[in-house]
Length: 390
Image (tube, rainbow, N blue to C red; front, side):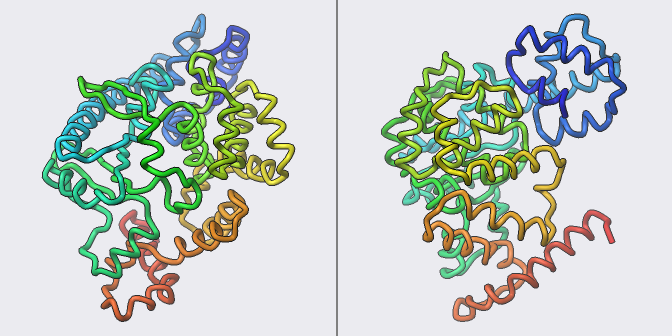
């Protein structure tokens, strides 16, 4: 983990090259290193830093393993970028405004390169009133819906839009996954930035010959801090984006960011993300963020929780009852308002996946709240059987 954290940066200071070289001389478990690398999805950054280390002391086998991961990612992000351009163009031709989130847009904005950030899926945010039309565009473009996995009744559909923030689709031949968002995060009270506000402040970015919208620096930093906080910052890929937005070249004024964070009520998550980047990745800590954290003692609790999640391997992704119960009080600390906390509990009390396990008529919909623990157990048992586990 020390080697991963040292190399999880676009630019490695010369003073740190000796630290990397020292670690490379130690008897490391390289299989575990590669496992952690894949888990945190930072192979492009790590290989970029290691290649810049003088007299690189890595075996040919390990260099080949890293190079293969980077080449596979480069091919993947080129496919994602081409598909993003195609979908944005189709949506715009249908008169639908769209803001791509993360993915190739973030890679270019933060790193100046598509290849330095590991690709995954495509996230597209559309104005809520046009979601149905946007879904039809995706279906006509060769996608099938994965979530919801079944047709929903009126009450189930309304609940799906209340307890989720996106639906998931997969391309029938390319296998590309698209998450079509109608809001930023699951609980709309967590990040109450309106689509219209974000659209009015958008910046143009061209990918594949198509000009599309990107978030301005202040809003982008806040969104990434909120996104990382939700998952306890348990993947380094997300944390690595923060230092890249704080370099002077990005032109982000921290005082303006803090003012905007207070307006949106996301100060705790902003402070958590920047403090964690400071502790884990040696990112310079702005004095204004240090002062913000001192004013709110909950921030230190959130940072400690995220640090544990980051260092404990696959803990966050464990679907156990204990992890889920432990995650709820953490989520409730992200904002102090009662309305936010109540909505968070409500979002956890239903799952769209449950509708595919048992189909209840709309008049019996309240039974889903009572059946939730049993349906969760049934779905978990099904997954374990599919994985060949007892």
